[in-house]
Image (cartoon, rainbow, N blue to C red; front, side, top):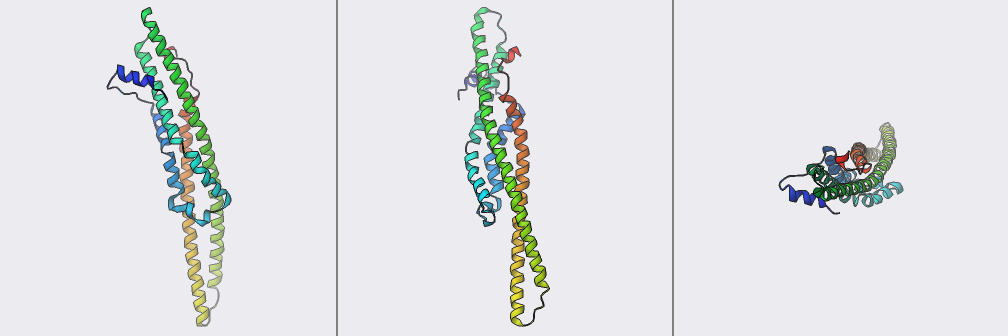
Amino acid sequence: MAKHSLEQFAQFYPGESVYLPSDISKSGEELASLKLQIANILFAGELENDQTFDFGNFSQALKEFPCLLANISVKAVDFVESFRDQVAAGELLTRFGVPESLLAVPVFTNLMSREVLSKLEASRAAEDVNKYLISIKQWVAKFLCLLKIQSIAIENELIDHQLAGTKLSQVEATGQFVIRTKTEFQEKLTKKVGSLFQKQKQTHQAMLALWQMLQSLELASHPIARINHQSSVPSIMG
């Protein structure tokens, strides 16, 4: 991706920086860190290695994960840099201003063309990011549904084990063998219930984090959509 305007700005105004609107910068940072964020959420507590989560749809969703996120960081950087070049092009044109001499018209025309091209490039980069965002939001929503199904399954299993524990506690044990057997079953049930509570806690934490991420992605997508549909008319004529 060419960054002619950024390079030209640096030549004409050394020491000055090209600043982006805060919402664009925030969106870029959000997307650049997306891969790590989702990895931390889904793989916290080693959920990917847990047999409780090993069933068809869930496994397929995990397989889609690296494919969807492989290039999102690169696309985010591409978008931010493309928009930075657009801002630099607009700043160069604004500082040059409308020429008062015909001799300056070619330079003015070149600066206008540069800004139009940079806007088109930024819009294209925004469109690329937006396509990824749509797919990722769909994936997160799908995973949330699968986690909800898993949560219900764990809840039902918890109820079954707790009922079994209640019934077992009502059994009158007589004799050493029966008492020992009852104690062993109670210990196993207690351990299993504890494990299920932990699984349920992990599932709820992942669901909450993914839901919050879905909301963050929605907010991050707004500035990107704005650039995607921006006008290519030079800013000096706006």
